[in-house]
Length: 209
Image 1 (cartoon, rainbow, N blue to C red):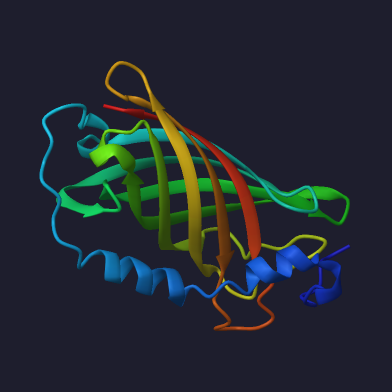
Image 2 (cartoon, rainbow, N blue to C red; image 1 turned 30 degrees about the vertical axis):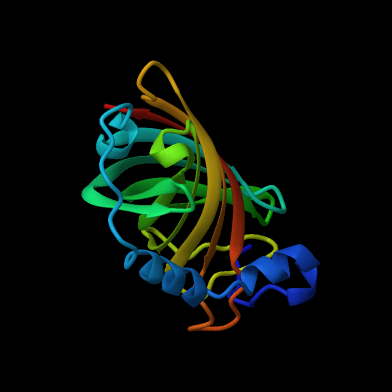
């Protein structure tokens, strides 16, 4: 049977999902803009490879109602941008990615191919030498083949904002490997309604070169 374009019933979504979907995209963007105005941090000679080298990554994400995603991407560091903050160092990078979102729809699984770009800020403590890091970013995504539609929700637009927070750990002799746990929210920020949004809990492995 052909799928109709009726929007999903809002009551099907859980309370936490509603709160995440309502997360304003503008607030993280303003925070990132303010951080960019911080004074530059002095460069350190030791163990800075993860901040200055590009990386490739593979990422898996899981969402409610049996939706999931696989993503392949690359990160390109902002080589000349460093800021001191709270005894640590902020660095930034461009996150360029392509992925496939899959979810149940009318008895089968429907796939949507999505591409995106996410400018991201990363903070490492101990003057930028800690192996642990936290990060946040706000970007844009675009569904290539169709709008994202599942049994439970329907995106009204192909374009969406992608907002994430995450934390991770660098390992290897020069920190060339990293693993991160992230929470990423996709929605159109209320530009067109209904705007159900999707929240992916993501596990990422990256290799710096």
